[in-house]
Amino acid sequence: MKANFQQALLALSVFLLAAISCQKKVQQTTTQDFMNETKEARDQRMAWWQEARFGLFIHWGLYAVPAGEWNGKTEYGEWIRHTAQIPLETYDQFVEQFNPVKFNADDWVRMAKDAGMKYIVITSKHHDGFAIFDSKTSDFDVMATPFKRDILKELAEACKKEGIRLCFYHSIMDWHHPDYLPRRPWEKDRSAEGADYQRYVSYMKSQLQELCSNYGEAPHVLWFDGEWESTWTHPQGIDLYNYVRSLKPNIIINNRVDNGRGGMAGMNTAEGFAGDFGTPEQEIPATGIPGVDWESCMTMNGNWGYNKADKNFKSTEVLIQNLTDIASKGGNFLLNVGPTGEGLFPQESIDRLREMGAWMKVNGESIHGSSASPFAQTAWDGRVTMKANGDQTRLYLHVFERPKDGKLTLNGCANEPSAAWLLADTG
Ligand code: H79
Image (cartoon, rainbow, N blue to C red; front, side):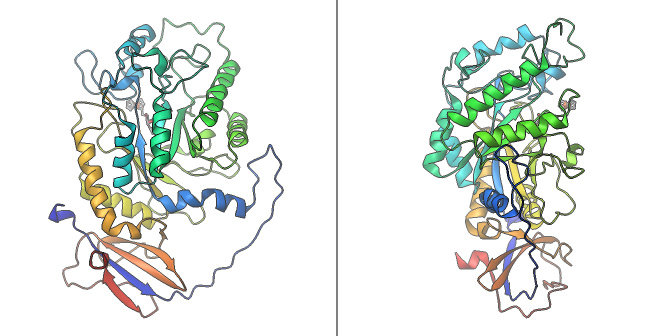
């Protein structure tokens, strides 16, 4: 571990004399209306996710084949079909080239687990419409490639073995299905005549039914995206939320199932929209919101899908500070890896996962099961998470930079700490 990201972590044990009034609100639930559930039922459903705090995002699909390069430019990622304006028939040729023979589900899951992550969210289908699983409702799937292996099945088995929760990202926007609307503005060769959007929605639902039936306990989360086009409406969002919950009642669904998200900040702008958690993308909110669940997703470099030229990786130090920043505000961190067309994590990602894992092994207690602390502003550069510990409260002081005077003061903490120690000294 590099000396410059050795953060001193101090655990403070104090009595917290806070009176928390908990108002119960019992609501009626019908079998179809999953939006109305009791606070108790919701808390129970969300508990593992709130405790997890740290997960792995995986963007993998046909776009790993061009690896970010098209016509001599190397600036593309998972959006390559749209951004480089690749005609459908041309893009379809990646199907024959997708053969990631070095893929090993056990290796991937172990790397996530060793990093201290508790769940994995992988792209069952991204915007390009390609399914990396064996889909009976589509020929644009992994079974049409030379690889012919159900990637999600192998990951589901590996995750079950390791106690990692497998989750699926599924795009509502689909640049491949003939019934999806609208077409890309630059697509002059694909007529929209005869396209029937409702038929597309039925297709999407049948794929979701496959995803919710064929992978054991997975998916634990359905992570929708591509909801912002004009064809996706609020009533359809509510309907899709209820549909997926009816398939797997305890599943957790992100807020991109509906269209209440306010831009990349990711939080819903009003009540009444479907979705269990907010989804800030490539950013960390300035503060958390009590009672609102959210998860910041972020790339390690500048792309979600594999880009062989993108070496602009965040340092492990920054990634750990992001994780603690997010945890100190009560959120989850979903950190992305874009595997290669061969089926490997890029070496830079492997290195960062391993280094984060070394840190988590010593300090993970301050992240897993922690909650936002009231100490948002500290006199020193760092963040504070906290946890109940019997009738005491344990505060975890993540010190990004040691204060020059060597004093860690905590303004607003009225109680006398009963003990203080470095987590690194207890292991
Ligand atoms: O799946 C990942 C992204 O592909 C997806 N969400 C995350 C989780 C995403 N959707 N939209 N965006 C990200 C932001 C949109 C950025 C865009 Fe662009 C600007 C689309 C077209 C111009 C980025 C830059 C993508 C292509 C060029």
